[in-house]
Length: 170
Image 1 (cartoon, helix red, strand yellow):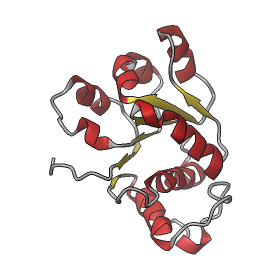
Image 2 (cartoon, rainbow, N blue to C red):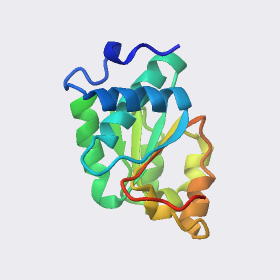
Image 3 (tube, one colour):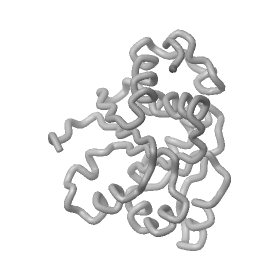
Image 4 (spheres, helix red, strand yellow):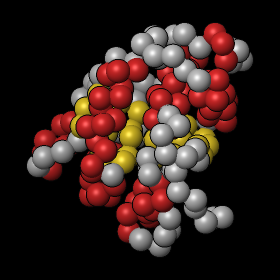
């Protein structure tokens, strides 16, 4: 059973004060296990995803998280992870050999662009994450693209899809 919102104080988020709606979003996402967080830009979807991940790590043993986001946001995610929970994170980039090694690193969070996740699907499938976070998920709203098809193949027990842009009802 999840702790009440006012008691969210694991190693996550101790460096920031959360708004009540963010605490509610964290608990919603953690309880749902697989969900869409569709808040407007600037309301803290990132911190909600990180917070839910911390709850799932603490209470349900999540150990490997893959964040898939636009290329321009990879280092922003890394910065937010350091700021809010201090866990190890690895940005996936470079040559095929370097990316393959990065996916195998002991870092809790692996951060890849949609393009890299598409190109590296075979490596991801060899050691699948416990949880996938898709940021700016409207990037794959066309389910018939190769990128969307490859992202859908990534197995995970838990998933959080983030968007500030309305999606179609699929």
